[in-house]
Length: 368
Image (tube, rainbow, N blue to C red; front, top):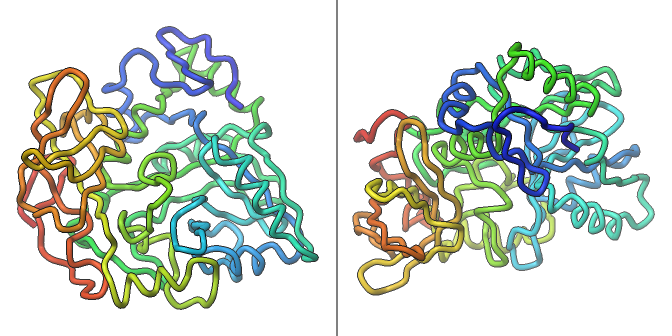
C-alpha cells in the first residue's frame, strides 16, 4: 500500500508510481545507487506455521525446505503441464515465509495456497496492505527502514542471473548483461514509507518509479511473472532454470514436463532481447507482434527506453527463428526495425548448449 504521493511531477496509475517527471534521470540515479524505487506493482503473501517450508518445497519448483533466515531465492508454481502459474521472490525470518509477488497475483496465489493446505500446520494471508515494497541497489536500500517482525530484516536480494544450486543456464553466463545486476527489495511498513516520501519532498532522498525499475530489469534480461509469462509459458523459455528451478530436488506439480523438456526436448519458444530502431519515439506495447519478413514469429513481452541503450525490449519468439534474422515489430503507428540477441539459444533443452553470442550490453553491444 503506497503512501500519499503528493510530490511534484508524480504520475500514479492504478496505485503504481510510474515516474516523478524524469524517468531517464530516475533510471540513472537508481542504477548508480542514488535513488530507491517505490514498487506499487508488488504484493506480499505471508505463510506461517511449522510446516511452511517443507510444504512450499513440495508444491513449487524451488528447494526451500532448508531455507536459512535471511536467505533469498525465488520459486515458481507450475500447472500439471509445466506452465508457469505463479512466481514469487522468497525469504524467511524463522517465523514467516514472505513471498513478494506481482500485486495482481497476491490474492490468487494466496487463495491457491489455501486450497493446498490439507491438514498441514500452515496459515496463509495476503499481507500486501501491511507493507510497501521498496527496491534498489543493495547499498541504496540499506538506508531504508525495512520491517523486522522476527528480528531479521525483510530484505530480498535478487539472485539473478547467478545459477543457483540445482539450476541450469541456457544463455551466457560470464558475459551476461545482468552480471552486474544489483537489486534488492525490502518490505517497509506504511508509516516508514510515508517518511521516505517526506524525505523526498524535502530533497533529502531521491525516489524513482516503476518505469525506471522496469527498464533496468529489461536490460538485465530479468523475466517477470506479469510480463514474460502467459498461459503457456515454460520456465525454460525465459532461462528461468537459472534461479527459480531446482532440477534434482524431487517431485512437484509440473516437474515431469520440466525434466522432459530439459533432458529430451526443446522449449517451443525462446526469449530474445531486441534493440529497437530509435528514429520513432513510440515503444511497442506488450503483445505487439514480432515479424520476420511477412511471418509472425513472436510477441513483445516488455519494452522500455533505457538511459544508455535506448529503446529495448524482450520478446518471446518461435524456437526456430534464426538468431541472425532481422526482425520487425508492429505497432499501431508503424513497423519498428529490431535486431535480436539470443537469450535462450534455439538448441536449449536436450542439447543444453551455451553458444558464444552477441550480448545486449548496458553500455554498448560487444562481441562476447
